[in-house]
Image (cartoon, rainbow, N blue to C red; front, side, top):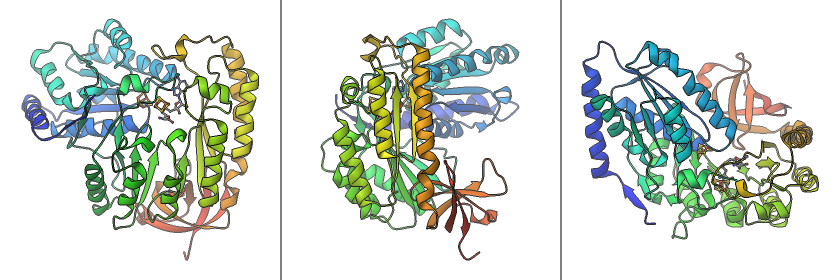
Length: 468
Ligand code: SAH
Ligand code: SF4
Ligand code: F3S
């Protein structure tokens, strides 16, 4: 499938629809307000920033309660069943609001409704949902919304992937000093448990120039932390001249004071070259999120991950030998179809061997349309629950001590704001992407501060500002 970069003319058309929506809401007795919520991964959050950007251009302001909204927009995730159940619950709860305010527009978009059977269920179960649109028409949101206002009829738009990479969509960023920048969309990997390739389509990389100029603009505008996004950043460029390590090299050459991090790095494509680029860099984060999924080679094969534990451990050892202060994190799935307790203990062994700083752990969730959904899955939910708790205990014990190695060091921390649990402290992130809490005044927010680490918690570091 050819990749189709769109911008200019096609987006010009959407700009016209933005003006038309503006003309509709302009005559209202109040400024239109939108309530938008994003479920799922950073990619979805990033898409929501674009949906919000388009809403802003359409004259909307934002509210944080659906009760006050003229438009409710849920951007959904399909990766596990509980993510979907939450959306069904929240959309269900809008029924009362819609009865009270029939003019309110309710829209549901994103990965979950890209699946036909879910869109159908949504359509049947929630007749008051006005607009349902998939992942491949995100850029046409103004046109879709306008047709609701014009015709007051339900609109459902869920085309298949046509290779589009849309450039130039307005973005409403939530922070002045942190920004996500997608470098690619979709995924070609077909891990057998995963729905993402189905709902996000084939892998499409953005042009390196587009990424570099966006990052340059952001950092010149005062942004201090850039998160590059892709389901498998290591296959960026898909064999073209600018590979992911090369893209990083070019971004690292940009002037300014900022950190670049990236997600997610698939172990099958993670090269020594990538690690070497990090070593030599000025801006690149010392954090590698390297999802292993399982410590059993038999299960990795069934998952279609294209690496074995030997290759994975070799990568980990190389990264640790080259970047002494690296933070290593991972994703793990428990209870993949056919997994035995013996397979599971191999995952525990691998965790003890690697000693991750933290791990995101999930119980396998069956996704319709994936290969794994067809596999025999004899282990009961209760049994999987027991394994899961055992895994949490093992990682808990490792995580408890993992950050201790940073105590006594001085770390450069980007101060992000007041602490979430302790308002009296400031909180920020180190170059290793570790949360660091410290005392200080609000004028440090958005700045880099040198912090001497005094204490390690399982999820964060605590320290003191140097020379303060
Ligand atoms: N592209 C990334 C992961 C995206 S999804 C990568 O390959 O690393 C994030 C995580 O959700 C995955 O790493 C996996 O651990 C988990 N996940 C995906 N599908 C799942 C499923 N069907 N059940 C349980 N966990 C799943
Ligand atoms: Fe899913 Fe695998 Fe693609 Fe990650 S690499 S999004 S787990 S198919
Ligand atoms: Fe992300 Fe969920 Fe879609 S993890 S890509 S929002 S299925």
